[in-house]
Image (cartoon, rainbow, N blue to C red; front, top):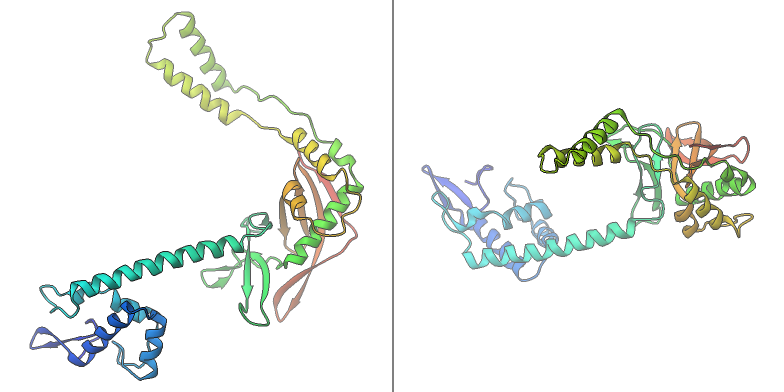
Length: 324
């Protein structure tokens, strides 16, 4: 009698494990078919179609149940289980599994690259702080839709963040509107503050003075000197503020120089001048340009059946700020 805790193809007789011939034939056929080139999905489909019982005594097979059999080292035999699959057959099955998994991994990597768009990593949720992620609904069907949702929209199998959903077209339109507002208010770029030198902290000043003392004394062999020099570098790095607004302001001017009104989405322009877009529930979208300029757009969400739909933008009552 086959037992659930025991690999398929074995049975317990008088306290000893023996081969259950009927199920052993199924196990052997799975290995043979797989080595011959049949996929685990195809094997599972065929076994289900002809009504072969699985380890749980049900005629339902899937990719996972076939995979568990193919990777079970018990079939090679040990002190408890008699050999059911020879070493060469088991080795060939594992080699093919490795090739398939490697190919699948490459396919998944390629798919991940394809899923990357100009908006990837650029849209942030202003409610929970997570990035927005592209979700494909009804994939492969005529009703397929692509929407950008907060990464924490679904967390641990429940809806967590209820911020707005957006389509690619929504985000493109937001960019166009915000950029056109900036084109009408070019003076915002001129308000960017000049670069400020980093201020020296007390700790840094004391470290700097101690280094100078040792150097004046000519005590270059003092073991504490390298530590002080490293400490000074760490303090400079920690305290330094990089103000790149002036450089980015020029970059922004150059990018917008030949534009008076943007009528369609320009991917290269987006990548050049946008730092981040932040979505705030029920209120606004903050479009941050390089150089610290932020244009805020109001949003209104239409809900259907209790779910968040895509956004509707209103061209009025917008604000702009220069965050330094």
